[in-house]
Image (cartoon, rainbow, N blue to C red):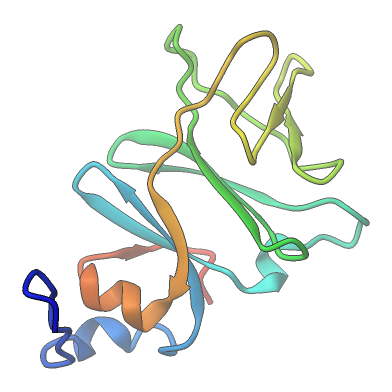
Length: 148
């Protein structure tokens, strides 16, 4: 074992891990001191329209966020929705692969965070990961209500 490594223990983690199956995939998000997980179940992200994906607009640690996942490309983006002027961005369903429109019709790229003009959303640390691994490191994780 590496001298700076961490040994994972399953002792005491059962109270957290029962909420999902160990090998369920989630998007784990770090926001301040809070952690939140979003299921990667295809039924949540897919729509019946070709090349159109759902997104989740949420709040973590009083921070408005948008979570995007394209199950065909296994591409994920998690962004703060507060713009530099303090306005909170509201986005519509993703169309054209990975673009979403705001209320004014501006397009936002949910893979890069780039928006109209020179606007740029701030990324939040996140990863696509098995639930057992995420829950062992972050047992206090909140699950998004979309998780079955």
